[in-house]
Length: 227
Image: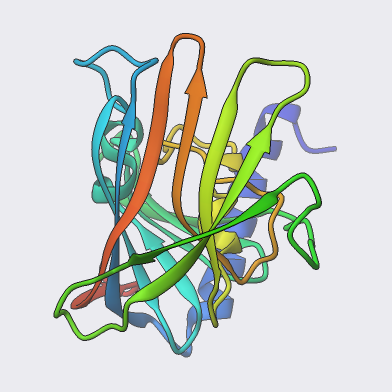
């Protein structure tokens, strides 16, 4: 029988070996889009991470992969170099160990399948245009929805749009059991191709807001051969 203290180590290296096997034929990924949201959370003190700022996430349109790095999770994930999210719920993670060596492993989430916008999202008939810039991407028309919570005094207004890609790896990111967290929580009760353009929640203690500012072309590459 293997000693119990060896089990976590063996599981880690087993996961690392799986990652090496899965990605051995494609060790480089080039992310060509940068998605930028701005946010403000009045419930968090001004000098703390998550109060206000911008969050950048990179996107690979050919594979529908999302890439998170320090521009996404800030100092909440100091040991993590990057985290790659796939539409099947797999996250490939590269981090530094205590000796400064890069290590890679996988985590897996089960994405809840939602086929349509829930009934408690009330469409108001109002619309707003987002992503109005000259960075090579079309403006996006968002529809306004209102959410009222029965057991709290909170009220949420959100703008949504259907979009031809899978946002589940982005929306479920904070469900990972990791120290790295993006600075606000996306709803996880929407269809995977529903783009959340803006959300504002009014609470008794202050407002929480987030908004998609832009989509732009970029070149951001990760290489699994570089350790």
